[in-house]
Amino acid sequence: MNRFVIAGVLGLMAISPATADSQPLTYDRVHLSAAASDQVENDIVVATLYAQEESQDVARASDQVNRLIAAALQTAKQQHAIKSQTLEYRTTPVYQSGKPTGQWQVRQAMRLESRDSKALSALLGELQKTLALRSLTYELSPELRKHIEDQLTQRAIEAFKTRAQLITQAWGRNQYRLVDMQVSDSGGSSPQPMYRGAEMSLARSAPTIEAGDQQVTVTIQGTIELLGTLSKCY
Image (cartoon, rainbow, N blue to C red):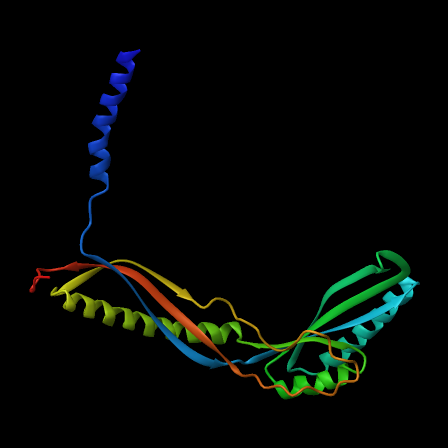
């Protein structure tokens, strides 16, 4: 039994140097980051509305909701600057104090999207005669976000290079080598709520829409290795 233990230890000792050689030690590496940001005006406004009916006759409630949403879609499609689509459709029993009331609630939502805030505001004023407004947000379109992020990436890389050169010179070196780099942005378009929470009443007039802006950031993180001889001693 002891012979097997000794053989195992010797085998481990034989393997260890090879493992160490496969992972060479590194020196004079510095991890740093740089970022570029910009305030960008949102170019898309998104509104979500819904129709809701309650009745003991679920078919009757469904027909009423379908009629309201169909009419709203027809009105919205007359505005070529506004995109419209239907969203979730739910039919649920109504409970009171944990007991069914015999009533059914039918609800369907629709989404409106436009770059023309005035046209969307006017349409919302019309649709709120029969529908309720659930949320109103503004955001960046995918194409605008990509354009801005491409510009910010160039600026962030230049800032990274400037900082890397500053660190290199501060340590008395004359050059550096880039070891690795990661580029990250502020994520997908983040909707900025203009209205959200308790739904607006049906009789509400057209809302005033101000698109506002949001900050877009691109961050560069990476590692450099200082090269050349030290001109100073630290």
